[in-house]
Length: 244
Image (cartoon, rainbow, N blue to C red; front, side):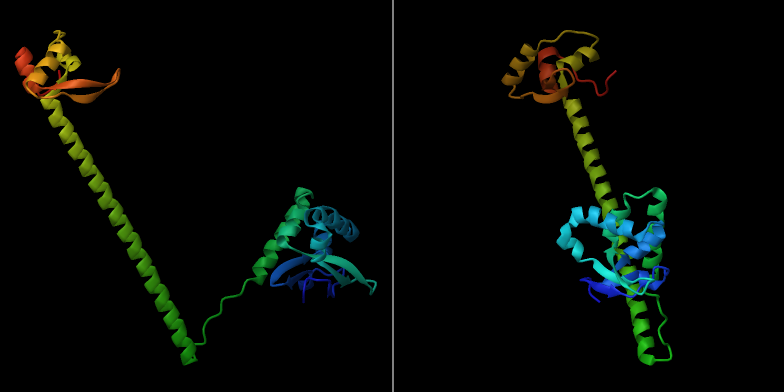
């Protein structure tokens, strides 16, 4: 049965399987059933479909869902067979109770339309072999998936450990540099406010061919830190191993 001007034998008093048909491989609900489920008159539902879905789809688009049914008076009357999307668009303007009735009916019909799993015929060797093979393949796939997940977790753990090792290495390097280099500000703190000249330190570092390095400073962004040999030559001071 096609969706183009199809004819459906359907009674206005019925609410059985004829209310839901297959059209082009998809489920559709008759406007007659929509009327019955929502408690509205069928002519009113037909009017709503023409107004709302006609605006959305146009006359040509709406004609795809046009059909007819056998009314209680024995005459063929027009109706629409709507797919789920168009049906829900239609009832979106209805009250909550009416919408719920239609949605519940869709859930019921879709559940009924799902194929029921059947057990293989174990009396048939070929069917039993296929069932065993499918079960074996499913188990192998599950084991492979589990192994892949385990491998990914292991790789993640190794990467995390590697990153931690790199951070520790960077911290060790920074610690070594903190022992070899010191800024003027740091030395002033370490030596209780003693004043130092960066010009002197710069001059000595040039003479010793030991250039300073740039280090982060919260106030200035970066400042110069001078090597321990420069501090010894300029001020005869050592860089303490720990700050106090």
